[in-house]
Image (tube, rainbow, N blue to C red; front, side):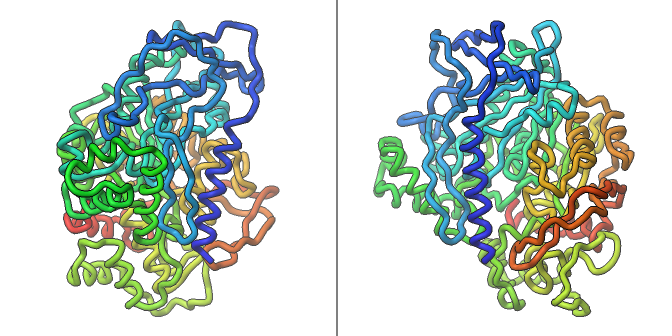
Length: 572
């Protein structure tokens, strides 16, 4: 069943992160002690990668007890040397609403980051900086992503920082009550605070604070987008110069005091045993386990594939909805690399949509603000192709019919219609809007689609950071990682030179389609109820091309304008 596959994928990701915490690193016989003023951290040297690594650096005080749902604060001073070889604990975790999702405990004292610096980096030889913001629906994930392979693929040419932030209800609880007695979007404020830490301290690790690129995938990519529009774009380059947003996640984003986030706040309080007056004070007095279980319970009761606690339009840090802010090009930073995958939606859509009635019912759950008129408009924008053989599943070429609205390697008919609606509304159209927002006023943008089959949501991450999957051969990953790396260093021509597609900074219409062809079959796997054959070397070749993003997949640009046109109803 698809929901079991979803749970298995998510659980495997968490397990991999836990295992990754215990990989050994070799010490180097030199002083790797960095004094940050408030604390002293002793890193380690990895001779295989020629990187100096510091793990578990505290960048903010514990957001616990009375400091829950408040702005992050500077850490207390601790002059004892910390042996920085262990990752900090992960924040409280909540998996999406899928059957049998397990409860995974975390630690509220989780505002830590990790630094990976080439041995050549120093205070006199400062390198550009890549900051990684993890994904996970704003509900789970951590900062343990190993940055070694992407740094190595770029000749150890930059420093990397992986950050953590409050997730779930701890980072995104929202209501008028929360804002009156604290802050909403606490998780976003954690990210901004970490970027302020980078500005203050990365020079001590050999990083250049004037050349910071923030990056993320899924919710991490969505966070890049939200940091891009923070404070109406008035932050300029004070926190970052460039952004890399892979599959930017934009679920419905309500005003902080709207009915839905307020109801989730009340549900969370009820689950935690806080009712009547003084709810927030009661929640701040609860033990962490009670709150973590309440966090998981409220999410589990939601619509399939969703999380309960998400960013909101808070009118202070995020002053307007992303769709309108991006259209107005009120953005921070100078340059943006944006990507989406060919099959973003299947992971999040229930695998039971066989009729148009099923589709309508799902749309009402997925977009609770929609009425009959909005649902009818969605169906008009995504018409049914009655000529498709439902027994034949295959990857589209993007240029001719059938399109992604009709068929993929895992679905046809109403199921694929739903998969594509979700993909475009939640990941793909936000990537189009974000790309368009950086196309003038001295800014540049590049847009790509990751199309290596299956190209499901998240399949691109191992191609960037490793370990690569067998269908992601070195010929592909080396170029893909160099595209990212060129953008971290950002000398404009480097992005084009890294990719055989020969991009130029675009008008928004140009998109690089990154695919492969050839190879030998090595496995047939069942994903989302369909059998998919995977190919590996020998014989895999890069198949990169430049395409028109607006005419792609039967007019995706027009459908993205449709979503922008009804954004107030989504809302996003």
